Amino acid sequence: MQTAHVQALLEHAQRDEANFHLALAGVLRSMLCDADCPTLIVLARELSIDLRVWGPYPPEAKNEKPPTFAFNALTVSAEPTACAYEMGVDQFLDAPIGAVTVDDASGGRPRSTWYTPRQLIKWAANKEGPAHFDPKPSATFQAVGSSIISGGEASMVDASGETPISRNDNLLHRMAFLQMAQAVVSLSGRVLERYTE
Image 1 (tube, rainbow, N blue to C red):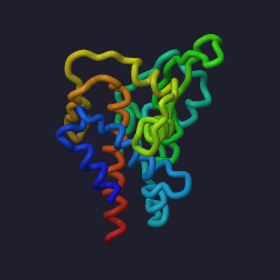
Image 2: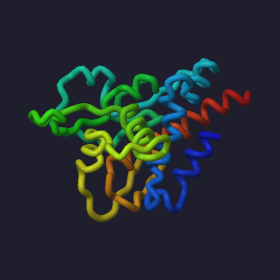
Image 3: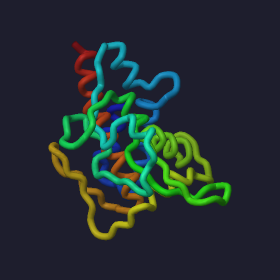
């Protein structure tokens, strides 16, 4: 059911206009980041399937000092990708996918910080409305969304084809959630195929 929801949100004609990338975060939270039962991860473990993905940074990069800003067009791929790092999906969730500079809440100097898929998913799902709404969103989540201003058209291109994005506000959010959702659909297909054998 969750895979069908992700697929429907990805393919919906009004996906970008209706900000369904945020709705995707709600389903991704349940499938990947739930504290008790991340459904995709738990089912893969039960079936002894090692879910592998490719991301822009290795998991240990989070221990390094983050740059002021880092962006990679690749958030995640479920297929081998050139110049990317292979890891288990559990590792990917806590590996950095970018860095931004955020104002210090205590009034000190701005600081640079890594952000991870797990953080993006939880910030969106728990504060932007898919699971909960908080009128005070995460400063880092806001910084990621506003870090690139893009005019014109945007598309994501990978080995499987092109994914046009009709709205380019919060482009880094949109790209990250769309790529994570595409990877989840692919990984879910493998898990469900084994489950039905």
